[in-house]
Image (tube, rainbow, N blue to C red; front, side, top):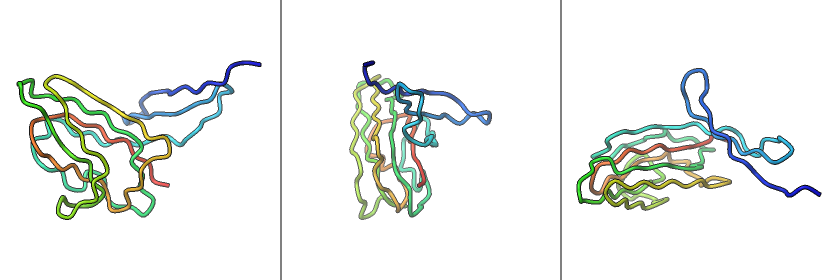
Length: 132
């Protein structure tokens, strides 16, 4: 019996949006394509980076410290339209010239929208999300 495995496939749609699919070894898609929201050289809060929706889920992110100084870049991904009284989904700290990414299989519910709470430094960030 063949070994079961799962593959992530990355690509671009015709309008340039990034798409990620999870496919099993039989070629069946495991989850709907994710949409992306790209933010370059972030140095301040980004309110409603992804607008609120009852079925909004954060399914992943990719971040890179982009200032290149010895300072770190620190931010929080928040469920909500503002950073006041936020429901923190994920804190992130990046060392100089470092990057990180993560994929959340079923996603994290964020019906209030997704906001970037900038704390320090400069960074590039891609948020991957699904509605539904």
